[in-house]
Length: 537
Image 1 (cartoon, rainbow, N blue to C red):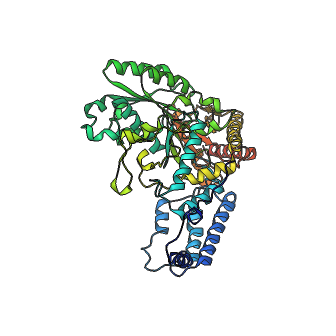
Image 2: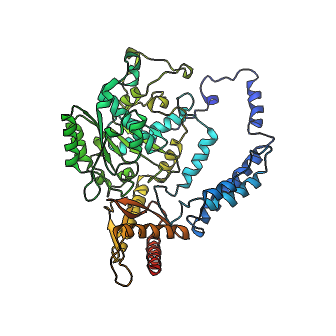
Image 3: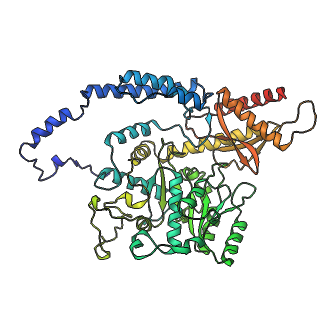
């Protein structure tokens, strides 16, 4: 273990406060926490009240509805009031929160919530978020957040190492997968056109060449890629949505055929996008085969592992991501299967210097010296950017940046990879138990690969009285009715989606506290709800 160093300036060699400053500092320390007459005891008591509220909320999750019968009109009326002229006591504001906010939230931390990728957050991460807010560091430049920058660099290094990326890899944390995916496509464009932001003054822009670029993704790809092509000034038709195979992975033959067709048409394949855990089904593309395609056709290879990336933590299931280490960029969202509270997304890039050049700007007020090529520091063999004053605003779209790395850093240190792996493995096992239980129901059909923590199934009942079968459209509606009835009754919550043009029910297991008994309970709720619906037919 490295020896600890006391970095307090007062304890550094040669530190001498100017005359009179020491007394002034002591006076300020007495006053600094005061605001509107509050002293440190008042602030501490405020903190205790908020902690009590958080614990109260968590403790009450299993005794309340997962989702209430809400109405936007009713909620808007509930919160309809003018901006207060005068402040109210904290106790009154907290009581309003308890009475109006708590009951009208989706109980994502409940063991009866099986919805989207919203995890039950780690308590240490929740309080780390509060600590980050208290320090209010802007991790845009090293000067504004020295330790925050170092922590984010370390978190990025941990993630790059997890995915087997080389030492020259780097990345940046972002608000979520959408911004990371947009960033990845921007990098692909730069690579295809042979340009970066550091060259902007020497060029008139990409011109018509950008209209010839083509991007390839499974039809199961995330909606953020539709946004990305628009944000980046591309046409929607430049995003080729390739059909999936029978377990919702991208059809490799169809993708290669699309690439060949585009080459014959005089277009330039720019980026191949692999999905490592789709939102619909949790399906994982054959990433190693996609890496080969990308190499053969000189394409940027991006992997959207926003959801499934956490599988890399597990020695048991990590091989499902074989080939991800060949990616040029990877989207990963710790606020999904790493159980972080929002927001904590990120992008990892194989060539960290290319990421920097793609977003490199030099605003005068950040006081950073612009180095010539001859003045660049020598390469540090320890790892990319170790020992350098990294300015993260130069590595992505965001300028002002919250210290989101703190919660990841603290939680990783407190939990460790092995415990994370155990939680991920348990979630996958529970999803498989769910699939096994639904297979026992003669009127339910499993849909999707059941690869990760997602189980898709469809209710296909026979019409009561042994009459004619329901049409596929009627079955679609019955599945919607089942989901809506469960939602309205508030006992549990899951979603539905569209698979192969038909409605499928979707259960997502992403809760480290969930047990098999919660799965058994969910199956019972679904069975009883289905039977009640049929009795009404």
